[in-house]
Image (cartoon, rainbow over all chains, first blue to last red; front, side):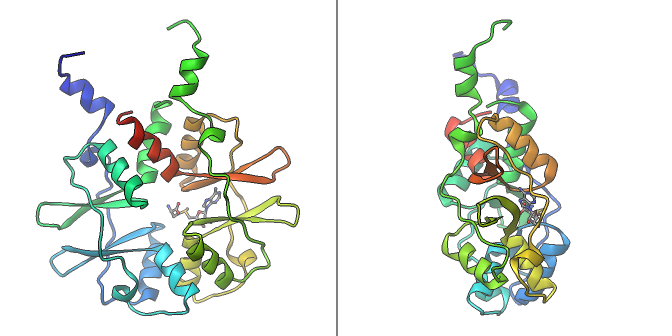
Amino acid sequence: TGFSKPMKQTSVNPLVGDIMSTSVVTIRQSASTYEAAKKIMDCSFNHLPVVSDENVIVGIVTSWDISKAVAQKKFDFVEDIMTRNVVTATPDEAIDIAAYRLDQNLVSALPIVDNQKRVIGIITSDDISKLLARRGNL
Amino acid sequence: TGFSKPMKQTSVNPLVGDIMSTSVVTIRQSASTYEAAKKIMDCSFNHLPVVSDENVIVGIVTSWDISKAVAQKKFDFVEDIMTRNVVTATPDEAIDIAAYRLDQNLVSALPIVDNQKRVIGIITSDDISKLLARRGNL
Ligand SMILES: C[S@@+](CC[C@H](N)C(=O)[O-])C[C@H]1O[C@@H](n2cnc3c(N)ncnc32)[C@H](O)[C@@H]1O
């Protein structure tokens, strides 16, 4: 130790961009709760970033929000049930920073955005758990 | 290498029993979808193991299943929307085995059961991701 080992570092602690899923499904805030539920069912995904016409992130809606709408018997539009303060990450961040941010904010996924806040991917705690599954230890 | 290092091994790769949450909220299969949604909202948890009167696991219901009920406009009872083939773990298993099982089955949580299939805890990919957040690397 005492030497910097960029190669080793990268393999031990990959970047968000190496792990994130780029086939992220998004939705508009004008969509109905029913449409969001259908998207979540069809893509068997749990998190839908809510985007503007320019693909800029304005919120996130999850199956938990839809379940809450059921509990409150209040079926409105995505903009009524989405979370507006979205915790995000960028592709150049280290994966442990993303894991820490998930933990601190008690969320299960971070939309990945470019420097104009456009959605380019998503990373979930499932993806991070997978890293451990493949390595066999911490 | 070549030597077994049980102490090191344990600290590097904890057991499911060390990490699992024991304050697990369960539900009966006779409950309504609405009751399940309310429980998920109130305990801000995503996964409810479905148990018999003896606390034996008979299924699992998540906000994803409730969202699916919304998409299908079919609001029945928990037994109609729950998943019956539940993937579980036991407290004595290593955490990387649990992570592997989550990954292989594309699920985000494993109810933890004793040798009589009674629910004693739950572990989620959030819990596993947290381990990485605290260690700072893989
Ligand atoms: C396949 S996942 C897809 C959505 C998302 N990836 C997730 O894990 O929540 C959703 C389905 O998995 C089921 N499920 C969750 N945990 C499970 C477990 N431990 N064993 C079996 N099925 C489970 C739920 O009941 C739900 O129908």
